[in-house]
Amino acid sequence: MSAKNHKTFMSTICIYLIIVLALISNACSSKATNQTGPDAGKQQENVKLSMVDGNATAETKALYSRLWSIQSKGVMFGHHDDLLYGRNWLLEDGRSDVKDVCGDYPAVYSVDFGPVMEGHNLTFDDPGNKNLRRTILEAHARGQVILAAAHLDNPLTGGDAWDNSDNTVVKHILDKGSDVNVKFESWLDNLAQFLHNLKDKNGKQIPIIFRPYHEHNHTWSWWGKSCTTQDEFINFWHFTVEYLRDKKDVHNLIYAISPQLDTKGSTSNILTRWPGDGYVDFIGLDSYNGTNTEALSINVANLEALGKKKKKPVGITETGIEGIRDYNGNPLDQYWTNQILTPIVGHNISMVVMWRNKYDPDHKSHHYFAPFEGQSSAPNFRKFYDTSITLFSSDLPDMYSMADSVTIN
Picture (cartoon, one colour):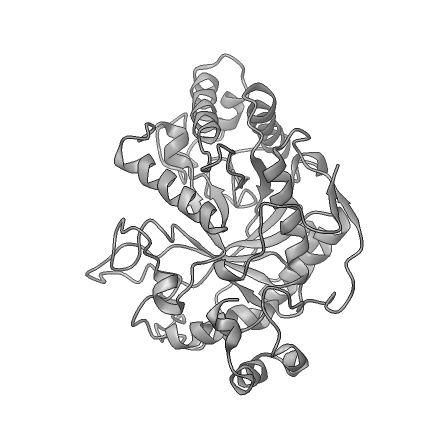
């Protein structure tokens, strides 16, 4: 049992009064076993889930089962690039801004596969991939869950991921044998090579939740709606899955889609350009809603309902406020209990993942989304950490063994 699970009864009651009185009865329970969502107190029924990859490794299927079951127990907290750098440090073994503040690592370690796919620092001997691979191995050994996005450069123009100057990029990728198609397939080859060699100490491939082409319902990326038709995007998604799964024999991926929705929306907004149930494992949502907690609460409720309908685990895959400040630049010192915890209380979702803390030791900018030592919201983050709803690394069950009452078709 982690140290935080020995918190006193009275301190927990105070935290829960901030959030919702209905949760006081859960105050003395262990995080690792306490149920906090609408299914709290109910015995879990047997459920059969389907995966995009019928040949997924045993460990990947096990992780998928856990993503489903953990939703009724709490919400895993995640942070992007958490083990690679922080506000005041760079590439320090075992370092984490989150751990500096609360004494524990995030449950979810979010990374970017863009450089790997493009062939930058591909060999394991150079600094780039060596550290990415090292931190993934460390996180997995610790029991953390690995989530990966891919900010890919524009393979047609040579611009970055936000270069939407040409609306024929995906059309060229899907044109078999074209220069852009050959180039992009080589990027997928690089990813396949990396994933095949990403193994734990027992030689088992490490499962990854992979969310390519995120925020596809917006216009800013070359795979977004300003550059692709609906059919082109769906075909692009199918092409990616089939190339990795069927041609490259990659079987340690859980395929996650993650549109972005910042204002109040509906399930149909989340399903924008849906590739089909057979091509999506995990329904994510990126949400930069600021302090609009009503919008986040409504969207989380819709996300939860959609996951239950489609029998797929769900979660907030990217969120936060840059600098943890309001629009006038005032610090949000109660941000974690007020703007993050309150909207997700009572909902069954698997994770809430914050964007990165840029390495900026001179503090020239406010590009950070999680607290660090000395940051004004850190005391509130520790309260957030202490609740039974939030799950961190030490709270997790074995995420790579099958969950009870869950089977994978």
